[in-house]
Image (cartoon, rainbow, N blue to C red):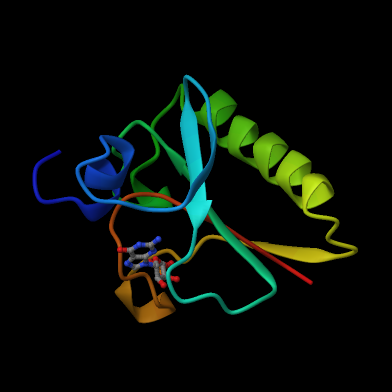
Length: 104
Ligand code: 5GP
Ligand code: ZN
């Protein structure tokens, strides 16, 4: 998707601190961390918001949660938050679905 920052990060057109990649998703450090560990887990597929999910995307979304769990373990997070902001009023600023992992 043209003009999508996270698509550009996925395509390595914009630099980021990538810490995990597989066929379905990528995870990188949030540029403005709000926790000791603040990672964004992002599907390679451009989906603007959770509200745009279609039938067939369930496995992909489950995969993001599984990756978040593993990254939380790897980073020794004792407890953590997993968050999707959905819509501008809820604080979403990047319209490419991303799961926030925030842990201490
Ligand atoms: P949202 O508010 O859309 O749920 O979250 C977007 C997140 O992306 C924010 O926490 C923000 O700090 C992060 N972010 C915005 N621009 C960049 C960037 O260029 N690089 C990285 N790594 N994170 C970004
Ligand atoms: Zn995108």
